[in-house]
Every structure is written in C-alpha cells, then in structure tokens.
Image (cartoon, rainbow, N blue to C red):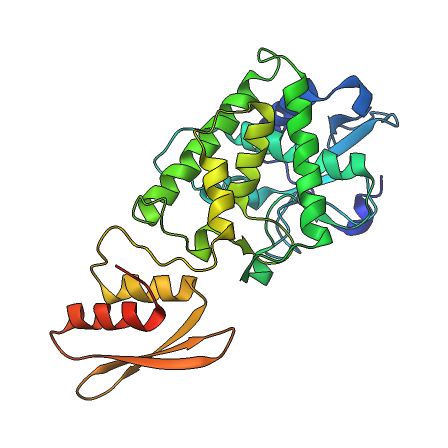
Length: 311
Ligand SMILES: [Zn+2]
C-alpha cells in the first residue's frame, strides 16, 4: 500500500465512526468475496492479501469531487474527512429519518469494495463528481461500472441475514424514504412531474443517486419500495415532462423548472419590465417572456406556455 506516495495527510478525526463503518461493511461481506476492510491508521499491523485499508485524509490537496474513493490502480479506500459531515445533505436527509454517519459510510465502503472486487482500474468514487454537472440520460461504461459496484454492495447485504446486516438494511430503507420525501417536497409532491433534475443523471460518471439507491434497496428487499423504482424508470423514459399538478406561484419557481428542462435563463432588468431570455440548449431556440410590474401571474403563465409546460 503506497498511501504516502499520494501525499495525503492522514486525519485523526472520525476514526470511531470509520471503525464502526468498517465493522458494518465487514459484517456484510461474504467469505467468497475474499475482502476485508481494516483501519489504515493502525501502526504495526501486517496486512494480508484480503485486507483493504481505509485511510482518513485531511481535505487539503483534494479536488472538491474527491470524497470517498479508490485511487487509480490501488487497493485501498481514501475518505476525505470533510465529506463525512456532508453525507446527510448529499442523500437529502433533511428533517427526515436519521441515518448514522457510520451507516452511510458502511454502504459506501461496500460500493468501493465492489470496484476492487470487479478489478476494473481507474479512480472510483461512490458519489457524483460535482465538477461535471450536466443533466443527461446517456448510458456509458463509467455508469455501468458504478451500477455493477452498487450491485456488488447490494448482493453482499442480501446474502446475509437481516440480523447480521440490520443497520445497513435499516439505513437503506431510511435513505430511500428520505430521498422520496425530498422529491415530494421539492417537486410539489407529484409523481407526474417528470423533470430531468429529478430523474436524469447529473454528469457522466454516475447514474442518478436516487435511482441507484432504489435499485440497491430492491435487490436487497424486492417489493419494499411501493413502486417507486418503476415510477423512476418510467420518469426517465418520458420524453417531456409536461404536467405540473400543483400551481406554480412565482416566476422564480418557473425559472427553476425551465432550467431543469434544459433551458438557460438570462434575466434582463429593463426600465419598465423584467425580461427573461430562455434558450433551449439542445436546439439553441431562444424565446423571451416579459414581466411587467404587478403582472407576475401573467408572466408565470407566459413562461409555462413558452417552455411547453401544461399547468
Ligand atoms: Zn463508484
């Protein structure tokens, strides 16, 4: 293990949490996987060929996208200490059900072990790299590799008894519940609003995070999601997303939806009006909507019509 050559500085924070997460992941691992996580910071320990050390690194020198990953061609996992406190946000926990940091980490470690098990080279992180934010439905090798690593994680949990993997199963259920709650709160509670922001993939390295969690939870416990996964797959199939059940009450909300529908929006403040210039990115079609003082409702309607949204 050549952790030092990467010049990460080890952190002494979060060792307890990481140790618990290592325990949760190891409990789920099958014998046949022939892998075992060990804390990378323990001195004087000889690692065996099945050991995969976990290092906690200080965040200096990290790109924003480097959160929890296996560096290219290596057999150890690096945790950027800064990322641990961000996990509830990344998984849209909000005011929803509590998921412990060790459970988040345990699930992510199993995903990373999937990469090692599958033996593909390359640097693998569990989460979306924030640097390539771009909504799309493109299928590519990277995304398939991510799904395969997820599948490894899920099949490990599934193969063990509920008793042995109780915390991880519970965390998975709560994560799915929280993400669905977030979806409902952010997108008006409607299953009928098929907007890319929700259903599509952000960037080209990872599939949609909610979709991934739904797939994992369905592998572990088929039928436990009350049809959410099929709704999600349906949502991704829809070409346009033209039904909003609840009324939109501000132009800002409408601008957000337009952006989710792949429009870019520029706002020009004129002396007598606000002009919204919308460009549909795939075709570069440009349209504009004017908002006159006191006529917001009118502007909302005009913009809905302009972007093809039926209210
Ligand atoms: Zn990954």
